[in-house]
Image (cartoon, rainbow, N blue to C red; front, side, top):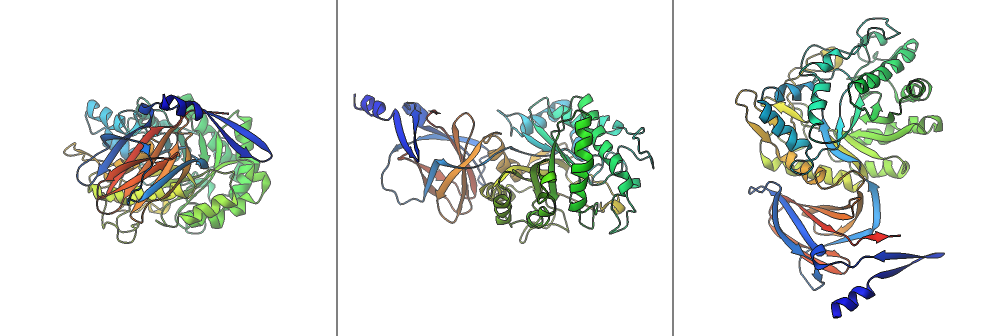
Length: 498
């Protein structure tokens, strides 16, 4: 009887909202709904291992650090998590038997038994891991402004990007964003450092090039959801195109061309080489309202390693534009964080802690989408394409999410894979980051609420084994945290209707 009375009293909660009153109807919560499912990955061997369920009970004193979860205070919407399609990854997959190949793709894309990736990158033509042949674009015929020689034939080959994307789509659903390292060479003044600017007489042709790319992929059953004109532009290594010119291209050439061709592809701005660069360079474009109205989201790379607060600064400056982190990796001899490993790829599970903290810190600083660079590489961190004039060096060993030994056929799911899976599998597109505060210095955590109402709390323990207390709606639960681990806690929230 007492439980029934409490349930009746809790059915209606009145919140004072000036100048009106908002009445929120809260469904009664059965005890089974208050059970928390727990998954852990840790250095002692857990790999997304389901642990014993815990329950919320009446609050009581505890000396453990408290994580207070608040579903009322809400932040950015989450668009998804994933990695990048490159020819190098498909070459590695094709070295396996059909069954083993399918198993890898299932582990990456299947939402129930795998990581459930929902947000992917697919470069426009060649990049440094377009490894199935020499450098290419979709039109290497000089002066072909009509794009009569445009062709995606290479992407249709067994190791090509379209083949890769189609194989992956058998196991999950995802959106794709596409940037280009380079336009066709003949559109530039030259490929010398500082001269890699598009000649103005080719702006129309470049717009047509982008449009034909999107249309050609659509004809092969693949939707390119987001177009990003250039990757790491306005830097010495790739296209030197400035952001002012990109703004002109977007508003006067690319968007009019796409709309004339009946395409609704969204336009992104960025692919900056690091987070602070976005804060520095985006205003050159976004201060023009005629450009800004066409921009759906902003994209930055993570090669600063830890300047997360600049993303929050960027969000505060442009709160209506979602921000994605769309590329980061280790590059042997070139790009490693301070104290990081000395070579790629990295087999040790412990390396995942670095990546998990990066994802967590990006999420806590307003990032809506998170995409790693190479999804799959081989035991040597390759294969890679060499084209020095296009900024693609030799050697170029990098670190992927999954390592496939093309000699022994052994497949290694890296620490990065598991830490990323704790986000991609449980935090689905449309989720909202919610407030989670408290904890202790060795715990890094964030809370989310999915569209189905389920609450996700991800907790990284960067130190020795400990415990924490989760406080939610005047209830509490205690969870043990293994040393150097990531733990996902999932529970159902009372259904709220307005």
